[in-house]
Image (tube, rainbow, N blue to C red; front, side, top):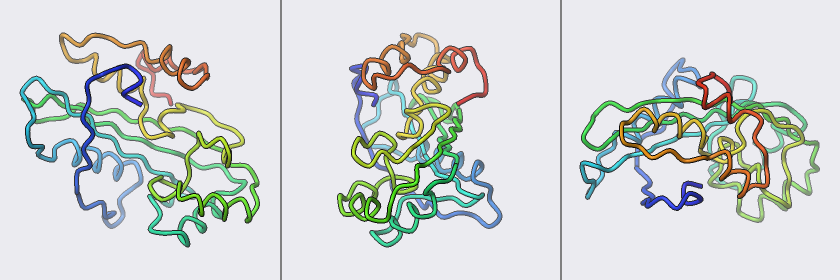
Length: 205
């Protein structure tokens, strides 16, 4: 999604232990993982570079649904989410290479899934798409169309809340602003109802 704005980026998958601590809440967990990703040493980083890390979780009945380990778990997750409302929480951690402490933001979006059938679940699982997705689904999938209702930041459910990222980056001097509301509308054909409120600093999304 960052490439929508023609930024020069390099994608890296940091290897960290994503185990849940005992009695750790979903929000504390997702913040911790985002920070650990952001602080992971990266070869070749220059002082002027910006490191952007994010972690997304699906929370259903206070239970975290991460990425499924295989087809059976993907089927179980999608069955659990079917015809129910859940939360998608994405934590952001951003730092300049020369600074150690990341800036953070968090986005919470509510998603109501439709009452899809078991055969639809199996077809979607067989497509292979669920395996790298928290909660085993992509909200933007045009064939499976998992969501019936949605409230919050659409790109956050995709994995990166772009307006939250923008307001975080604007805390750095010299940053050139990007109009992510316009970019998202162009790319997704979706007019976000919360962009202005996010950019105004509201805890919304």
